[in-house]
Length: 570
Image (cartoon, rainbow, N blue to C red; front, side):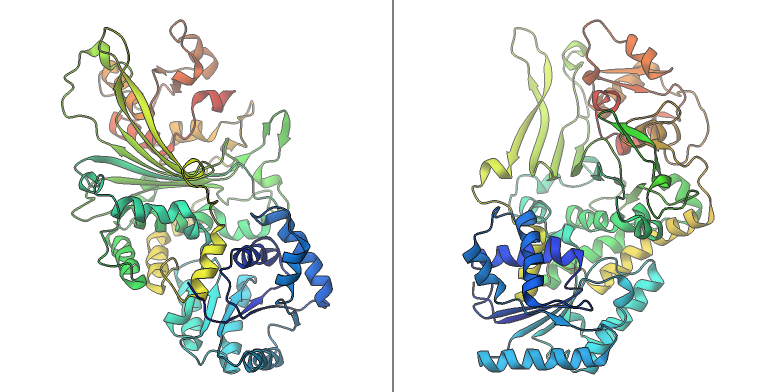
């Protein structure tokens, strides 16, 4: 596909995002032959650089982050001649006058009008400044060719998001605004649409009749690292859960009529409008927050969140957040969607899991079903990109014994072509004026509207037990995040004994958690000793003795359990 000539202006051109993501992605697009024949990249920043100095810095970033590996000097030199640095103050109108002249000169040399892409890779405080000055300089006038790219975060709450959108739309038409979320550019996220609507196999059972619940998980091994000051203002809910809401839209949306950008975005907005609002008095029932404390990994001590750089020693900012949402429409009525994200968890995983219902009647003998689990479809986004379908099959032998098995699709094994970085996809879409993967103003505001009751309740109530999970592994004084969620999940309502027969409870817990043994009560060390002879740690999960009634217990455990016991306690 031929791409029209383009001028890519990067505000914050000497910054970390440009170095790590934007320049390596543009370079990879160039090597793949997907950049226009005529293009220019204008990094714009306040620091004084010669082109040669900046080219050297960019080359270091490309060498580290390009998916192409080691860069040939001929390839780099061919790309670097298109990179023209411009020094300027983002708040100075003269900067924009110079930029207009630079763009006009390039178009005159090329003898063709070019798309002008203004990418704000700057701190959010500049998002309200740059669009207005671009408009004052007349750089916004061409509605077809002039585009502005806005990075996350789009506001800190509903009011600030509305104010930012007002500033943007005063200078640019909505069709010119590309609100970027790199998560939505991942191949496996885009594949959700392909999997659902290009294959008729699963769509008939993709509803409340067959789906028990859906979990959307983004768990990270790393802490906040060098982003302490930003995270203090954001927290896990603001930082990641909007990503989850966009994934929820892809999973729950109705089939689109065409692959038109606005048609797809309309379907996503329909889902957000159908999500049941969380009332202020329901926040404790529908949301969980956590904060990591000190822990260890491979014998190395890890700092707690409150010991991280630029973080308050009394911080009440959450580093783990989980929500339970319902989509009130014909397809999804009554099906819970669990959204969860956290820092310093034992393994890196991003996935969507569709948990199907149990069979309505178990016709197999009890002995055949000891290892029986409901079917589950896992859409793995990273690190293992692919799809896994878990179901039951007969174990070889004279007896009828059911065992869980898996069918797997792997991107790496199925396709010779490597997956492009998310920014490659999104930047290419901007150059092609394709807004399918970008968030529209009504999506942004609908998402913030859903989160506001939780944010307001958390702001007004101090958490009782922060930090409440240990980084990676529990310390002697701390609890792992699953201990916390098992004992106090969804803001624990108080100690109650099981209200169902123990055998029924254990059977359903085994199915829900996909383990062979469930041991109730006592400390973990003692519980492990209660396992049957020959049972391994991978087959078991220990559950606190006092937890609420079965329906709430299952909801909490289903929504929170991410790793097997062996990984939790190894």
